[in-house]
Length: 166
Image 1 (tube, rainbow, N blue to C red):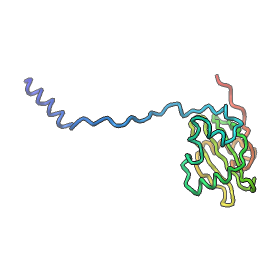
Image 2: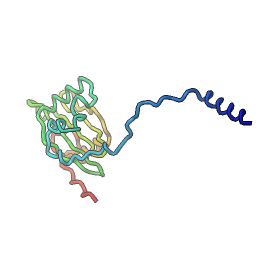
Image 3: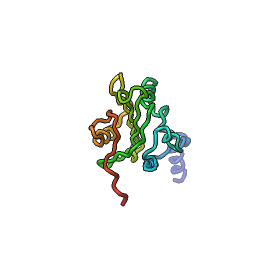
Image 4: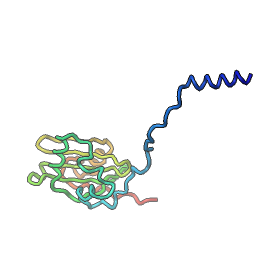
């Protein structure tokens, strides 16, 4: 009887095949995506992306194709200090710029979601108004907190102040 049980166990091992080698460890999603953006309120985009751990928001790291990247950089030549936009439970740091000799005809907007680290990037220029990297939640926040109700207008987002932490 023991021989039969041992044979069955060996058959089970053979049927399953060799044990799979462990693969590379994958990074688990962590709350590290949540960002404390308050220290960057009033900062310029160039300074923000130069800060430690913020290089992922630099133009070349946004995942834009060549033409979109050029449009964004061209329309972000003259930068404004970034306000925090807040509303509906969302908060984002909003960077805005315009082209040096075509402000406000050519504008760029980049918003960073404090909760998720996701990004919205939009440009309005001679080629039209274009969302280069969309995020519905951020776009809704930008529209709701802009005095003109449009992300593409060259105005500062003030939005209501964030609720105090409990």
